[in-house]
Length: 140
Image (cartoon, rainbow, N blue to C red; front, top):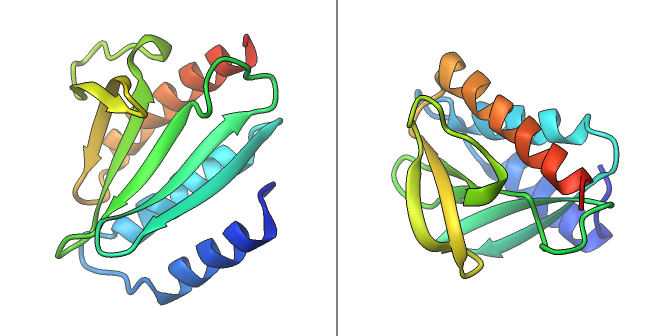
């Protein structure tokens, strides 16, 4: 995992302190982190806003126009849940499972997928979106 040492330490501490709940959202977060980590040229940043969100942001080294291609937000709630957001023009959503969020990702239109509990079918659907967004990022 390529990221600044401080962010890496903060991410590791966050994961270690996150107690799993019946919804298995910690496992879902780890799934996306590991899936992205296997992609060539992807680097991460981790932004904490304690009490609000914890954001894992992925960018591809070829990417020039945007600061990321996906943001996996852990929403601080009881229980915690995930919001996986992409720039709207970087993915498709053929099953219309995402929510369009005007200016929802760093001021640009976004498509976000809420993961309120680990659902293998939904995770696979989002993985396909991750592939699409990563490919767009590779293209510039």
